[in-house]
Length: 267
Image 1 (cartoon, rainbow, N blue to C red):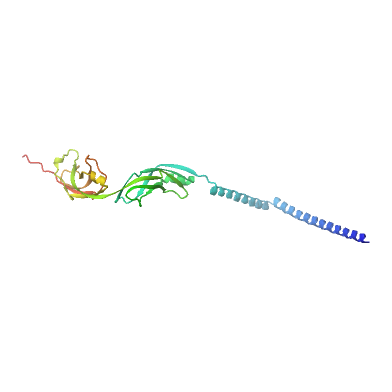
Image 2: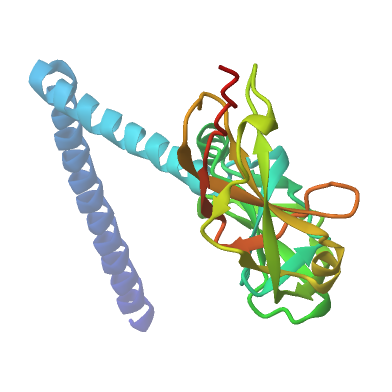
């Protein structure tokens, strides 16, 4: 009796699982039919097909644009450019010091985006800066730095530094004499000695240069003058060999009054 009840319970359970499986298959089949009909409507409906194609095309373009942007931001190739004879600019108190040993030009190798390097090449904005604001009298080592470059562009300067000598300038007073520069068909004997508005001037230079000065002359050009005249005469310092000494003269010019000599009357 117990075996018979056990067999009946097992049969009922198998029947329940069988019914559940059948119901699941029916639902899946119904869902599959609906998806198939929807797919057929999309494929065979021109408007729906265009919409779907547009969506997929948009997704594809966005994907390509993202890849391109990623390559641009993170995988962009850098190039180098060699700039020769870039001017070296120095900042210092020229009225107080004289600098020797500083190169006038330097070479520069720059690296960056090709568009930025093209900008550097066309605008010719690159320069080399030597900041001498904190140097002191005597020997100094200064760093040469690149300047005038777009942000994102790196540079290596050659040479990277320079050994310079800072010389202090001193002032000394010198007497001034005149010197005539005559024109064609003129002689110095035609003119009297120019009268100068100042007999002495102040010259600022290093000690060595001040000691080398032997004369300071006011240069008066008589070309084109056949009567009395006055002019601003440029002041020039000379050493014992007659070579010009590069110094600061204050004032740089003075007024010169020149008279033409009267020729003797033989009548």
